[in-house]
Structure formats: structure tokens, C-alpha cells
Image (cartoon, rainbow, N blue to C red; front, side, top):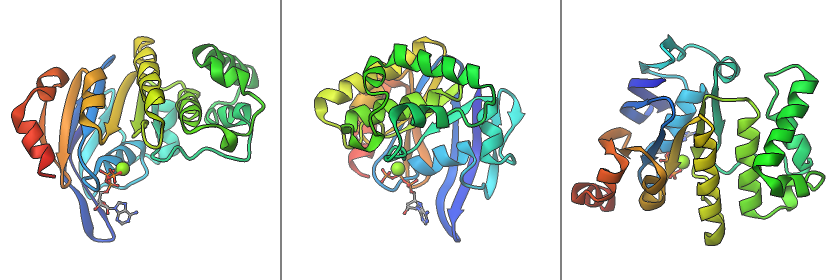
Length: 234
Ligand SMILES: Nc1ncnc2c1ncn2[C@@H]1O[C@H](COP(=O)(O)OP(=O)(O)OP(=O)(O)O)[C@@H](O)[C@H]1O
Ligand SMILES: [Mg+2]
């Protein structure tokens, strides 16, 4: 479904990704793990169309997408829940959801999708008229995920969904990600926390200074001594 091949990205001449290749097959949860500043967010942003490539290619369902602007990738089925959530804090929960459907034009369809999100996330239904910025970190993350789903993605990318969330909420967020995956949406999950991410993923990649240094079945990576060493050495 998603094929990232030999991707290189730099910020004002400074290399952030030197050689990233990874694949997400339909129906899978793929974890991309690595420590601070190793290029996780840059990888997701490159797939979403927010960082231009210096080299390499990105294909989605066989079609090259790396030359398309971000807003043309969304209708193809690529959706990013960004680092730090980026909600509209002064708007209601419902309005934040509606804005997640900006690439779709039928009001009826959007209203139907909001109802679907309320089914999947009952807490958001209870809080429909609450301002997003007044909710807890965990609730805001639920809203950010739901907003990402409003675009009806085939691939949902999540950038550190457990960031800034109370530990008891982290499990809930991971459960939600698994439930979303069970509805047929492929997931590319970025996490600093190796254990949390690999525990729910099917496949995993370890990124170190802009390069994929290891990949394989998530379960195997979770128990691999080399991964632990590479990871601790970051
Ligand atoms: N807007 C930017 N301008 C310049 N350099 C940037 C920018 N964004 C990221 N970088 C640099 O690119 C490299 C990769 O950053 P990136 O944000 O992708 O890492 P990350 O793995 O997501 O880290 P974290 O775990 O802290 O979120 C880092 O060296 C970072 O300083
Ligand atoms: Mg990041």
C-alpha cells in the first residue's frame, strides 16, 4: 500500500533523513521507533506531503505521490495525526471533527462521519460542545485521532499519540488504534516508546540518525537484543 524508497530529506541543507525505506501493507499496524531527533516525524511529514524529498520515491497503492501537494494526498487516503495534536483549542469538539473533513464537500456525508466518530469515541459525543482546548491530554488525543479519521483514510499515520498523556490513558489510546485498524485502516505509528508501539504493531522499523537500521516482525524486534542495544545507544 505505502512504499517509501530511499528517501532523503533535508532542512535548509542539513540532512534529516539520509536513506529511509519502509513499507506498509494493507491492514497492518507498522511501528516506526527511534529516539529524539532521529527523523520519525520527518518521515511521516514526507509521506503526508509536508516535507519535499531531495531523493527517493513514495508510492501509494502503486501511484507515485511524492510530487503531489499534501491536500492532494488526503483524498487518496493518506491522513496524518501530527505531533502535539494541533487541534483548534478555541473551537468545539464537533467543529474540530468537521474541519477534519475539509477535503470532502457533502455536508450530509460529513455529518454522517461525525456520527460514526461519536460511536467509535463515546467520550467525544459527551463532549461535543466543549472547547477542544479545555479537554484532558488523553481526550484531546482521542479527538485528534477522530479528526484524522474524518478524511476516511486508508492509511492513518500517528505521530507519538501517547505524548503528554496520563499513563492510564495511554492504554486506551493504543486500544483505540487497534480498533481503528480492525475496521480495515492501515496504521503507521511513530513512538519513542519501543515497547508500547511494538506491542500493538505487526511490523516494526527502527530509525537512527535518518536511516532505517533494523526492521522485521514487531514481536521479533521486541525481543531482539540488537534492537535493545541499538536503541539504548541512540
Ligand atoms: N523545521 C525544521 N527545521 C530544521 N531542522 C529540523 C526541522 N524539523 C526537524 N529538524 C531536524 O531534523 C532531524 C529529525 O527531526 P524529527 O523531528 O524528524 O525527529 P523525531 O525522530 O521526530 O524526534 P522527536 O522524537 O524529538 O519528535 C533533527 O535533527 C531535527 O533537529
Ligand atoms: Mg517527532
